[in-house]
Length: 337
Image 1: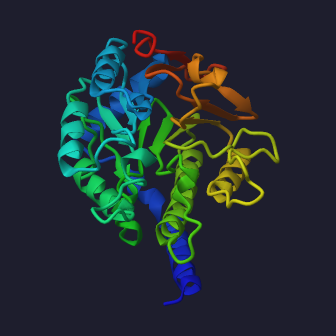
Image 2 (image 1 turned 45 degrees about the vertical axis):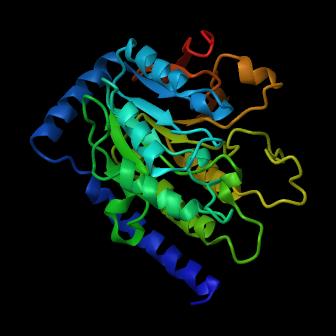
């Protein structure tokens, strides 16, 4: 099958998923009903959730991650999202993946794992060649074996892999809490893992189609269920709130922008959405950048807010029915180094 035919087939599959996916979000009975009741109560009083901003990405040791998990637990979050499980300099080994899963599973609160590019996209095999796809598939087997979060308390999630057409993409998950829809999406910070070498971009192209269907699904659910907000966790910053013509790439004139399509889609869907969209990423910032040492802050463009995690962890407060819907406060783990 030619690349053009393959992309066409995947696009048709994406459209089919978008048309049929909403029914999958219906809550089950039993434990799910109890969870829904707790979520409804949270909607009335507001709640907080925690974000761990990949403290390992600058070569710090595992103690920083352990400290962030312990510190964020003190805020009694509804759940915690960890963006990234290892530094790019650490081995891409099964042993390390299992070790990090065990550590994250020690969280008292439900723990959602959102993958970072450093977890898989730069991995090499023994011959020095890219091993990214195999390692990504292994991470899926280690961290996303069922429809529950990690942690002492479990949170039910719905995965993109529940669709037969996108069976591989278990890392993309969504859940609801307090009339807000939360979701993860695999957008690695290294230009969305776009590979300029001819014939080596199948992973990027296939994931692009899956993410397109995923975003369509999320906004459809948020609209139909009248969610007040949609929060999206990723590794890379797609530049949705950046000024037109701005590029995160240092030489964008000669390089393909791997985030171009997802940025266009997010902007278009957010403009039609009646609620608030919050994008949270862990895009690595240069140490010399003033923002790299500042408190995380939400930057707004219309109804879309964006924040790059600049501290080891942060707590985000959600105030249903209020303006702003979201506010963020950076944790102290980074400062305590």
